[in-house]
Length: 230
Image 1: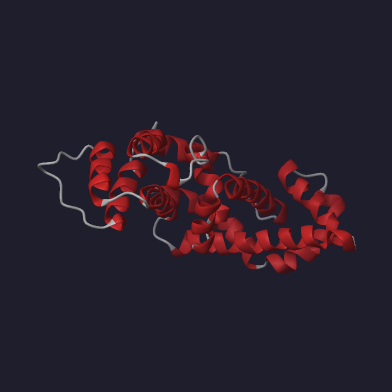
Image 2: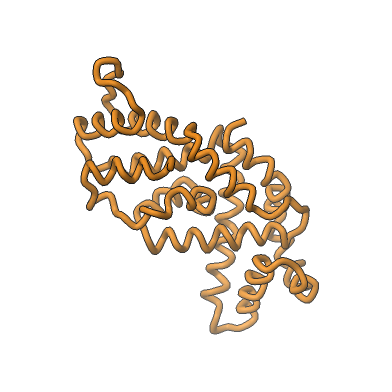
């Protein structure tokens, strides 16, 4: 079972809820008193939705609705892709390596994966190198432990809109942090419809996520990628 299979088990019920979210939002607003007695994350978002009742806060309401839609798209990606977590890590590795030449990329893969120069295949594209590094990272014991812990912290799967909203709130706040700290990588994930899943890998990237790839040296890149597996 890969990381994404593990994630799917936790999110299967939430996907069912997401498919009928628009109907659920109306019901959710009509039953806000009952919602307020439930878990904090869902309640917090429910409180924010109260802004929809005031004309001057329609921009806030629109942002919330957009995040809901983005979460639906992200959950669909969990089930469409073979391994969405590996894909996110590969995208991050590509982002880190983007400004390096072939020689630097070859040196980085040697340092991260442990390939010996005399035995390694000659990688010629950033995509191939990024995949090899991402695969090596995703299979490491340190990375696996962090991701399993992050997934395990998700609320227990419940067939309630509030349970789904607790996911959305965590995801939205994490995506907002990423957008603030590293706008280019946020846009990369957004383009792939998975920025709302960043909260799953945030624990393994948060230490260095504020570094932009345009400022990285080869040593910086090696350090950042090694930190993911620690």
